[in-house]
Length: 78
Image (cartoon, rainbow, N blue to C red; front, side):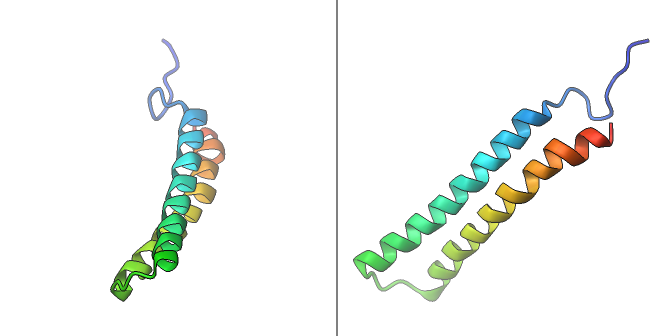
């Protein structure tokens, strides 16, 4: 009988790398959007600025938390 992992065949290192890059991409997207709106001085509603700041925050959280989950926590639960 072969040993099968609990979550199937998940490549944890690839998931950690992809989640980190995705988080950094979200952070850069939010920061670039905010920078462009400020520099060209468009009059946009306040919710647009809030959305871009929220995208930055989510990007930081994704880049910091998900690699820890995929690289440390999930392999330890196998």
